Every structure is written in C-alpha cells, then in structure tokens.
Amino acid sequence: MDIKSGLCSGFDDKLGGAIGNLNQMKGIMNGPLSMLKNELGQLEGAAASPGNALNDGLGAISDAATDSIPSIPDVSGIEDMLKDCNILQGDLLSGLQSPASLIGGFLDQATGIAGDAISGVLGLLGDLLEAPAAFLVNQINDLLGGFGVGSLLSELDGMLNCLDSMCGSDVSGQIDQVNGILDDLNLDDMGEFDIDKAMDGINIPSDVMENLSSLADTLKEETAKSKEELTKVADSMSDGLDKIIDSNIDSEELITVAEATETESTKQANKLKSFFA
Image 1: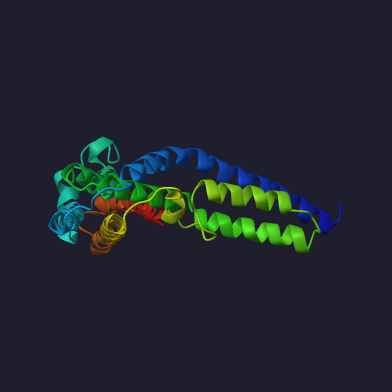
Image 2: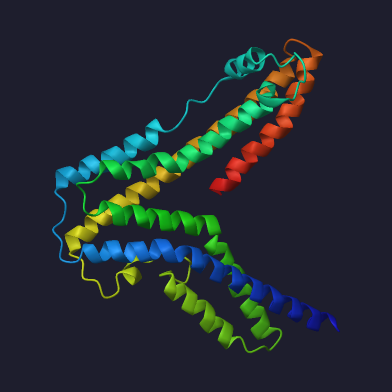
C-alpha cells in the first residue's frame, strides 16, 4: 500500500467514526428536541406573557446566576483550610484530611452549581408560558456545546474534502447522510441550533417568539457568565496553592503535602476548565 492509499484509507475510517459520533449525538438529542417540539406546539396561537412578568423572569434568571457563584477564597483562606484539617497528623493524603480532596470537592461542587442553579429557576417562572421552551433551547445549546458539534463538523468537512479532491472518492452518500442528521437536529451548516427549523409547521405569534428569544438569550448569557466565574474560582484555588508553596508555610512537611496537592488541584482545575471549553 502506497502512502496515498494509506492516507485515504485512514480518512475513510475516520469519516465513518465521525459520522458515527454524529449519529450518537442525534440519539441523545432526540429527547430534548421532541420535548421542545411539544412545547412549541403549545405556543401556537397563544397570547404572549405580559411585559412585567417577562422582566421579572429575566431578573430572576440573572439573580440566580449571580447567587450561585461561590466566593473565591484568598490565600489565607486556603492556608486556613490546610491547617484546620490536621493534615500533619497521620496519613497526610487520606480522606478529607487531604487538601487535594478538599479542593477537589469544592471544584466538583462548583461544576454542578453552574448548571443546576439556573435550571432551577424554571420552577419560579410558572406564569411565563414561553419559559419551558426557552429552557429547552438552552439545554439543547448546552448539549451541542458539550459534544463540540462545531469542531466535529469542521473535522467532517475536512475529511470529506480530502477524500473527494485527493482520493477521488465518491462522498455524495456521506454528505447526504451528514446533511440529513443536521436537518433532523435542526442545525445549520455551522452546527448552531436553528429554532426556525424546529418551528417548521408551527405558527407561533411574533410577540410570543420575541419573549421566547429574550428568555433564551438571557439564559445563554447568564450560563456563560457563570461558567466564566467558576473558572476564575478554579484559577484562584490553583494560584493560592502556588503562593502557599512559595511562602514555605509551617514546615517542609506541609510543603510536601502542598506540592502533592498542587498536582491534584491542577488536574481538578483543568477538569473544570475542559468541562466549560
């Protein structure tokens, strides 16, 4: 097998795997998309929520996002955590006595906060007819972001182009397959969710759609802000540990523990950052 044949064979295998991933994503997305279709159907011919109720709802979303962010501990606060947990007694890296466990637990909790707090606001917006659909749009966008659908489509496009131009392969069938999945998921060519596609055949009044869009946009903005603030928490925790290590607090034994903690906490911070990437 020459180099070109080997490359083309590799591209063909990777293309099949990428389309498989896209199909897997479609299977997971079917539930939320079906729920959204149902909610949109209930908005057909509906009267828009009053402006004051909408504004109250938008404010509730922003307040929930702000309140969900834990305070960022300073260096002295992290140092106090290390001292208060008796890490110099017994097994230095066991259970909750490990500063790595403390910080890891803090960051794991923060990861959950990012999604749960804003989602929990839906129960407070019962008077807003458009709210359930807006929250489902936000959930769908979060799922698409988690799948990295934009990168996946870029990868697919590159492989299809190479198979066509370099390998001379007929990729029309694969292109039709990808486009069919995008249509089923109501996505545009860039992998962005297109609510107009989801509304196909459903006649929703323009003022209802304006309310839905305002809610969905606010949810998207506040979710992004929450994730940004939680990433700052991760950075602060790692930076604080670096400063504690540099200051050589208490003893060489504590420094040894802090160095071990730095490695684990950095992993946790990177884990949090990758979750939001």
